[in-house]
Image (cartoon, rainbow, N blue to C red; front, side, top):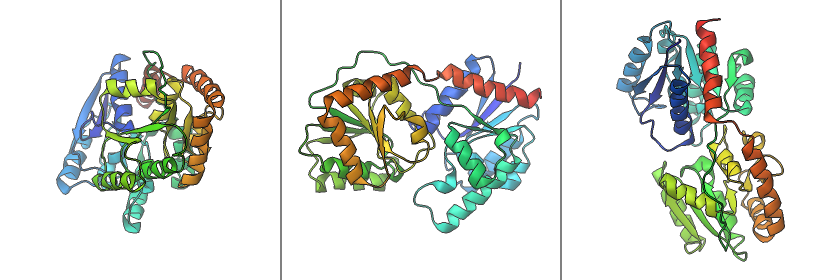
Length: 348
């Protein structure tokens, strides 16, 4: 029996797609018979304080050389190459989204993160990614070895309860309040279809407080107070209830390395409106969603209008989404993919 370790910064209960993936992977590995130690690192990554960096370097260097070590992407992409080289264990980098491609970085910070992540990719024994898109990006832009990259698509829980779409149709968006998620684009698009019947709820924590304040201001400016609820973080039960009530899932994302929320929407039979960017075209089947260019509120509004005003089209896309959802892997499947990779590092 192999034993493994998983290094994660901050709180594993943080409500983002990346943390949810890693929590389910950790528990899935344990359930599949691979005892996996959770190594908790400081929460300042990917911009670590000197103390958090020193603690991480020491903790990772202490992992025995016979114990494969999965390293969360915030740490993998920002730990200094010198500290990375001191790790004796076989290292699996968990890359959800290359750090240098995040929104709002200075040119200097972007260059530093790119060079750091590229160096660590070259040293890693293996890399785990959630989508073929991320794999292609690491190969084409970072020069990573494709033979060392394994795609472990996120699992999906089968929904409970019966869908009961509301009248007027509910447009549901799920994503942290961060510029990359494009909620500002969604608000501007909704403002263009105020003649159609709908209401909207945006679920997601205020990850970027300044951006969250801007979204609240924009909602007022666009006259959407009575039709759009910025719900923030909600309980799992409330999120499930909203998904059962929703008619359309909409996320005007600027970029996604994968996007767990799309699989969740498909599993619930929700037609999707989103953007043709990152891994979204690989994740959302053509007959289950309408994809438009990112940063284009007018095009997003046109796509929303199609689904909000054409019940027959909406029903057809809902059926296609449900078919795709039934074919999605489980979290056990995801864990088995990772388990095979870990075993290969100890028993080539």
